[in-house]
Image (cartoon, rainbow, N blue to C red; front, side, top):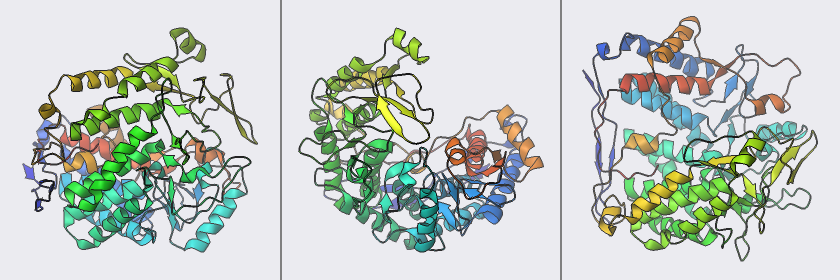
Length: 530
């Protein structure tokens, strides 16, 4: 058997009497014979082969874009990029976490060095304010501005967040969150202070950018100059979309519990209260993806295909957050208006007949709702475009395809969780609270410092990946629609196949899940923040 030892970190009690413990994952691998007919050695050999290619052929100073042509003549993040660039959003931090997962499974130092290189790239590119943008350019800011200038000459389909150079940082698509959490994981794993300092700077950024009410803008430091027609710059609005509010709460909680950063506590509590303040009144007791900084914190717009309106997904996400807050505090104020939100979701759900008209279906327990409903009327808002612009109306025909006008909401699971909480005593509810006393909080470092879920693995899928890696040094993929549909830097035909970090990460996750499906994890006192 192979063992990777634990590392324990103990911190002193603070006034809240919380004991913080950070751990490395403990993994016990079963003998290779437990892996059916695929030897573990074959899988590990394939993992190392694919990783060496990514590190030695693809990586740029430890960082990564999303896709590369097989001859490396062209490369893409969300849009076509310069070779001097790396992507933060769904890119370099995610790759770093995959390397750490492989290291903690195998103990191979090569994976740790790859993760350290990714961390170094992020540290190099950390903004002076402490956050991160969507992408970095090792050739400097002048080169990045030139990239934006090229992008702006063409029509930006879907990726409108890249249509204007701000020179600041973003919470959108977890760019800052993923970077901060990955560096936190690096610090807890290595205890090297070079990783702790950028985490502390990131915490400074999160604290400084928080509004008094407890929410955060999409970008910071604040800019207001990108005005389109009659629409103001939305990047200063309080943002729920793409996990901004939830991610920042999770980061504050991680810093508080794992690093003993007591200065994160009051902002964390304020962020929790903010969720209550942003909820609309009946009969629209939901949340928007963005809220304006007006007296009522009313719903706001974002990109051209994200109109002003209440949003089903934001509402469901905030309901789950409120139930988390109740588990942390035992304060019933967090439960008080959840039934109003359920009533709102029920009021905007499509009937079976309407779903048939839309050609949609849902799983048991789910309901189908419009992505956006009009403020004041609850009328569904539908999204359209032509080559020149987007528009929103009430017509469900001819919808855009890159962004859904409907969303499936697992309402029954929300209701079940709510009823379950009502059935518990306060002591039972808060037994795993990170705030109340010295508690035994379940969870693992892996579960909340690792971004994304493990890919499902079976023998057939693993065997297919191994077959590919016998022929190639990488796992091939296809360019996503947004990369193909936006103007690039060449008129040459797009490659039919690309070197894909997404496929690499999915493949590595499949291998790791397969190798660890019979693994025993030791659970220590860590907060569950995922």
